[in-house]
Length: 272
Image (cartoon, rainbow, N blue to C red):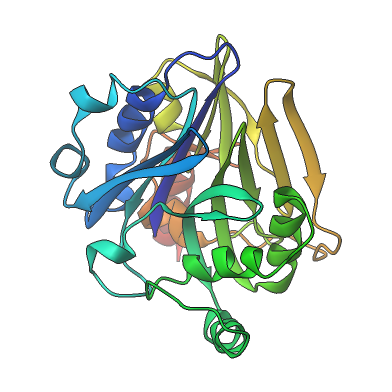
């Protein structure tokens, strides 16, 4: 379990302080580490550290950075080590351009894909399964970044909700089953991506909608453009632990109040 957050300002306003506050609202989803990423002058910039959001990041410094789009992550380690190197977001500057990724979920075929990529010459710098996505993208030569991401997501199995940063755009992506939540919000000219709606509430943003299972949502100056993975399963398979344990009770996930879901589950349990 982790928490991801992203922001894109259509009018170019700085967003890193919003990302910081969004991560604070998602602190319950991960207390091991926190980090943010943005792109400036064609390069990925990442600030991350161990501990809670206020311990790992300096809010006053972030508020002075002029970045109109950024992503953030709070980590609860389920794969990889507990080193700073394995904290997210992770990023790289590839031939296609700079990219950074914040990931909530688990890739069940990460080990097999890592072996495949290493045989092709890939050098992994972390033990996080999130790097598998980066390495897959790097091994999609001759295509634009968005197509490289789509091809990479078609190869992975498991649960993922992603906030991905390219130069000039923010991407939100959710696995075909919809295991992990991902929601879109908006306040004025700024569009947000978050693991839970409570992170939108702290900013006074309105819920737009959930990212659909198997959807890749491109957010840029034109607004939002939806794309779909080519093959989708016949039904959704949400993680039940989101409603009973992971999520904050004041959040809304896939149109359902977490508080009400827990209350109704308690009633059902009492009737057994």
